[in-house]
Image (cartoon, rainbow, N blue to C red):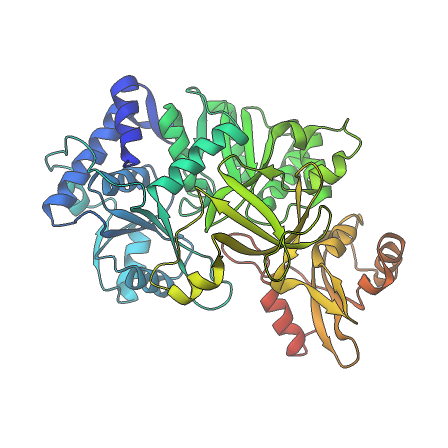
Length: 507
């Protein structure tokens, strides 16, 4: 089934319901949203875009983004959303790798693609060419698609090497959406999805359940993440749902505490995409209340590996609430989750190993990369590359990426465990722990620390804290002050860059 049917059905039932907002201004109701997508689908079909063809989207967060997405689906094409923060050359590489003959782009992004020599037709949004496409005869219904047909070609963040294209089918995205209702949160007609993170990733994946329920879609005028703007829009629209990386949650909490914002109008903040440290989520819940839900997923199994419910995030009565809050929750309804050893054999409760997943929302493979697919999908299981353990109640706790684990003197050190300790110190704003080669121990633990504003770095105090909290062999052998941690466009810390700094002697 074509996902665009969800839009067509909602429009037929609730056509007059407000759908797309630019800030506080309504740009389209559901009838107009669906009609625009159907016309664009008709225009694409008339231009020779066939079912299964790829259509790239290199756009800022604007209302027309969703019209382009659903218009491509109406034509039976697959979308290739590209992070708007990428360089034009990076975006052009994705267009070429995906074999997309057509790209929709907002003005600055269109210029960047042209400058990079992208080998595709570029339609600028808005432009006369785009307006002309909207004059086409609409398709009567979305083109039929099968459950295994490509819907969304998702390119991984590519922190090392070139990104890989994850094949997301219509079945995967439907399973993800329905699992959200079962395991994460409800969506109501009076809700509003606020898109303050890139629509090419987690924030954009959540548009579908809001379309299905006929909720509103709010695009901040800034086009991105601005805490003051988010709080203002939340007060105006009310019942706001938003996706946020953990770094965004931390910034929202800091801004709210500094300005007296209460978070009025925020109903649900789904956090995912990186490690949420215990101290940060406790502080956020203490300030905003029970509005948080955690999701753990990967592009290879989008947003649907585990979920930590609103109740679990806010609960302080359970005897093990801290352990549960440190976890990423329990397996979602459409998947099985296992902790496996190096050969993929299941490990007992509490023992750390690789997180493995199989189910309806797991990818069939990477785009035109059979070797990478065979390495990642083993005997029907997705090998996530994440290390974790599962307790007797099914709560999964991430300990780190397998490639980030440090082996010192034959003992495993999971950086996140050390980082949690360092972040409990009042002088520490951020921390990242990596391994440095050592002639005797193989690797030694090194911590990069961002001090809080107006504070300094006291290695002696940090050392005492670590010695009081974790085993001596896990204690960092060096504490390096850094103004800010290197991060990619999604807020993930680039530990490869930190290791490179150590290798180059830039301590």
